[in-house]
Structures are given as structure tokens and as C-alpha cells.
Image (cartoon, rainbow, N blue to C red):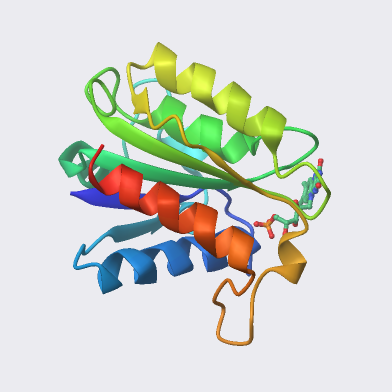
Length: 173
Ligand SMILES: Cc1cc2nc3c(=O)[nH]c(=O)nc-3n(C[C@H](O)[C@H](O)[C@H](O)COP(=O)(O)O)c2cc1C
């Protein structure tokens, strides 16, 4: 099972838009990927789901993570790195079984010109720590506000080419 994690809980995020694009691309290739946006996290999850606590609300997300063998993490650049909410989510998931020995593709985006290079690099290190195998082709999309057409699809040839390559490689990873 493939799950796409949209790595911010900001409402109306470009990250979710991009995650939905990946979902559509996979669907067009016959892969029914699930979408797990961090907007689904319980409001009080910092107190309800860390350090051995578990709410019924979070358990639903945990079950999805447990059943997933391949993850696509899509996450924005916040203050030069990946969002704290994404690390807190990983910290809240059951360790080590949630991610151990599984596979991941990483996609970084930003409004600035670096496309979350540093955040993707840092998150790669964390993936290695939790024994999650990362697809070598990682994608960085800067100036994300210039990337979507009116239907929320990527339209620039180069961005389409690299994201397509990543999706193809991830399917056979
Ligand atoms: C808390 C916060 C910090 C941000 N820091 C950066 C940054 O360091 N570099 C950058 O290029 N954009 C930064 N941005 C802008 C995001 O990259 C931009 O909102 C982009 O659309 C991706 O984030 P989104 O998925 O929340 O829309 C920041 C946005 C927020 C909300």
C-alpha cells in the first residue's frame, strides 16, 4: 500500500495541492495511493499522542501507517527546514514498526528559491535512522506558487519530467 503524507497542517497549503497531484498521477498509472494530510492530526495531539499516549483519533492514522509499505513524503520549507509538525508526527508513530524496513520517496517545496534542499537532506537522515529506505531521486520544487495551473496540475515541462521520473522509479523501487 502506498500512502502520500502531506507534511504540514497549514490549511490551504501548496503541499496538499502537490500531494493531490501525486495522488492523481499514481491513480492514472493504476495505483490507488492513500492521502494522509497532517491537517488530520487531532488538535491536541501533542498532549494526547506522544510518549506512550494514544488517542482513538490518532489510532486511525497509526493504522494507516502500519498498513503502508511505501510512503511519499511531501513537505514544505519552513524557516530553512522541514516543518516541526512532521517530526512530531514521526515521533508520535509507533517505533520501530511504523517505518522499519519500508520505502519512501521525498519531495520538498518552497516559495523561495531553494526548494527545501536542507529540509529534505535533514529528513533523509531521520529516515535512515528509523530504517526507512529512501529513493535516491529526491525532488525539490522552488517558487511553488508559479507551478500550478488552474486545475492544480503541474504544467512546466521540467517539473513534470522530474516528478514523473520520480513516480516511475518509486513504483519499481
Ligand atoms: C512558518 C513558515 C515558515 C516558512 N519558511 C520558509 C523558508 O524558510 N523558505 C521558503 O522558501 N519559504 C518559507 N515559507 C513559505 C512556504 O515555503 C510556502 O508557504 C510554500 O507555499 C510551501 O508551504 P505550504 O505548503 O504551507 O503552502 C514558510 C512558510 C511558513 C508558514
